[in-house]
Length: 181
Image (cartoon, rainbow, N blue to C red; front, side):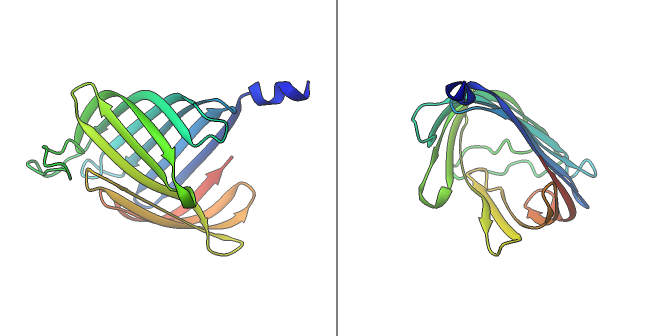
């Protein structure tokens, strides 16, 4: 029975309710497989909404290498004619695609993510979550080749609740609470 624990799926969630909208992720994971859905809902059409999923498998025993497939949908009023880091027309404001990708955990637990969607659009992202500053304060940050970025902090109130604040390049400043499970 001890050896069956690694095959069992566990659920986790992180839901932030802040003044600029809601961010969150729900995941089902075991030692080899992971399925997750994340979202960002703004308070108006300018901030818009986006949802992204990853369903995949860890390929190594240390869980550093993860291959996945999923979707990326977003709708936001934005500036047309913007370009991403690769010089292609930026689709960060209007997108509805299926994608495949690979994630690799770099030193200092920075997750490098490279994906390509069914139209051939390449996207790379770097993210670090849960960087402990003190026993109760955690920092995080994200940047991608669509020239989007976000950073934030949480103050842990108890096992399931944290006071949180973050800045998102598309949604602006937010302040509120994060539910953790």
